[in-house]
Length: 239
Image (cartoon, rainbow, N blue to C red; front, side):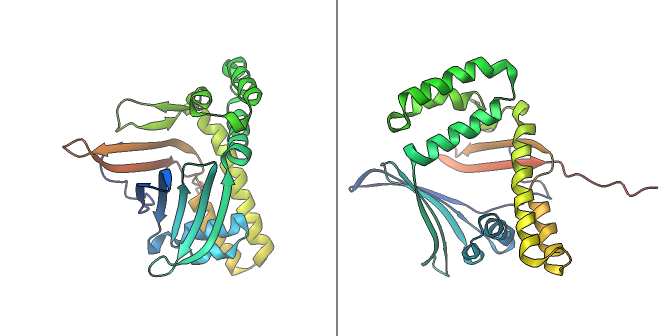
């Protein structure tokens, strides 16, 4: 997984910062800076969400300040001074229930893990999301993700779940394409052009999803790489 990206890969610039402020015990901000050739990302977000403000966004971010709220934002402008999108989500009331349900949907197709997963889900719901902590949630995440001790291999999804994740992706892709069709009409040039971009952006046949890491000689963090490998479906036009 180490080395330069493949020639046909979509590459995104990102920045990650962690800051300790006196007002909060923890302050974390993760933001993704979109370079000029990555406008397909904001285009896809606009069609998926129905929010055209995403067309103007050049930075997408997530912030957390040690309380129950995670803030999502999209900003633009030369100095990232214009807020185009902002939303606060409660970890206990919105994020944790959503993640639990989605992970359950993902792994419930694996009959070998069904009893094990059912026990975890029951324990999570009994405890209640208001009292949910990372240790109680870890077994659920560990049933889906591999946390390798080799940072170059990083954190990745078990291959047995990739086909189910692909089904979720296909549903999102269909939603975006339908939004295009409703907006421009099936016979329009806009639908043909944007539709091809959306279909290219979403993976057709997921091969790998992982976050890997590299470190400098002194042991300090160097790079974080989020990689999605896809095998595009190609139509055979031979007769």
